[in-house]
Amino acid sequence: MRTKYQIIFDELKSNILSGTYSVGEQIPTESALQEMYGVSRQTVRKAILELSNEGFLRSEKGSGTYVSHQFRSKSGNGAGKRTIGVITTYLSDYIFPSIIRGIEGRLNEDNYSLLLASTNNDVAQEKKALEMMLSFGVDGLIIEPTKSNLYNPNIAYYLSFKEQDVPFIMINAYYEELEVPFFCLDDVQSSYLATRELISKGHTQIGIIAKMDDLQGKYRMKGYIKALGEAKLRFHPEQVLSFDTESKQALSANLEQFLTDNREVLTAIVCYNDEVGLEVVKVCRELGISIPGELSIIGQDNSYIAKNAGIKLTTLTHPQERMGRDAAEWVIKKLQGKKDLKNSTYYLPELVEGETVRVLEPAPAE
Image 1 (cartoon, rainbow, N blue to C red):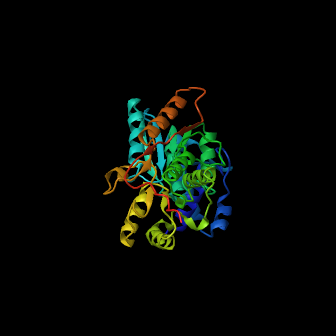
Image 2: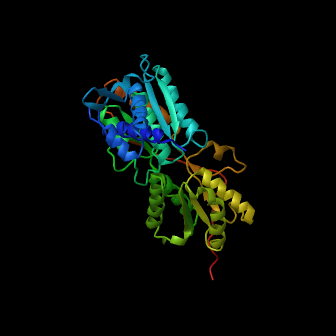
Image 3: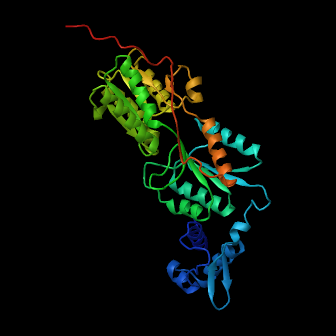
């Protein structure tokens, strides 16, 4: 549990980093802070003193306490070597190591340091990561947004980077409420190609499993609906299983119910990604549903887990390492003063054939 002093320290620091209190602005008086937090003057002074020692505040005798810019020069990158911050939702699994490898490889070529943080797709952890990057004084930033399909309460931090002319670019998704450059897979096209592949194999009852708190899930749902519409196939809400970051823990149980309810109808499923695709494979084995005999499955992202699983998953490509390298290249060029850099890049996915899709024989005529 945080002490009262720590609460004051953290909140004042957050307000400075997010731009709520701008450089040169006077913060509330000691008396006002005492009243706001219900603490002693000694507790307020302790928080102010530590923030002053770290370069966030400066006191003027007889005048008050003001926001200082000194914390930027006190940061860890003052030795001359430039540092690029990287914030991803996850670090150690799925496609993220490949993306980070691409970023790191390109930064090393120009002798840039890398400062890494992850959010676990949690906005509170994203806030901490952004505050760390601002406190450190990174020269540029590469971000994978957190819960990109939902309103983000940390927008003020991104605006602070803009105000300080710190270039940043987003990967895999972006916040639609911000004008921000990005590198993304064409997620609409990915699910569209997956659904169209199943339709071409004779499937007409096709479900989808989509993660809906991320922009990728929204666009992958859009691609699925687009392909159904082109083929004049009806969209069935009951053939959609949606989940989010929090309900992912219960995905296995929800999948069991979904597959049981739709067993007599569904012949194929478009999965949000390979991780979900292999979870479907696992649950199908538990339920005695054969793949692809009874159910065809397509994943997305062509991840290492799809390549190394006991079954070769049919999937769609994702640029992974190339995306990381391209994002690092963009930031380096921006710092070098290059003009006319592209603000949006979409990578086109390609189908990777596996063994989880079969041709559905037409039903015999009556």
